[in-house]
Image (tube, rainbow, N blue to C red; front, side, top):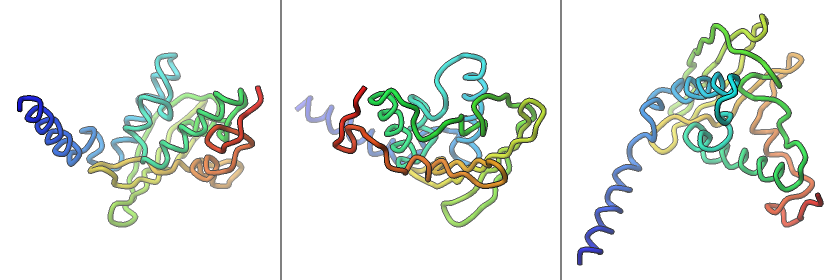
Length: 175
């Protein structure tokens, strides 16, 4: 009886907890983006993992985008090669700094928004767009759009490209 009651209370807590936002900072679209840049600034200082790696990505990103990043990490681990992303998507480059960060939110539709991050990196202006969706009671990053040579570059589209090998493709990589 005690075990059944403990299980029931545990499940009730899980159900009740799933209705609440996973983080206090995800009540507004800019929250996960602000968190991601705080993480990126720490990473640039040599502390911790980038925002697209565990433990951050599942808190900041939609389930689909987090799964695409996880697949890219698995490909890199199995193949020893670089994945689909050759730069830090939050910096729009392989290296950088974040000075004078500003975040602007543009509502798109119910449950969707775009957050535009603007900052200076090595004295040059950088703009990164974040496509946001409401998921699990909070806002999550669903795509990151960088610019390269005047053209938009969707991180989601890049991560959705096929790989040459990988356990997730049923074709082992040769290392």
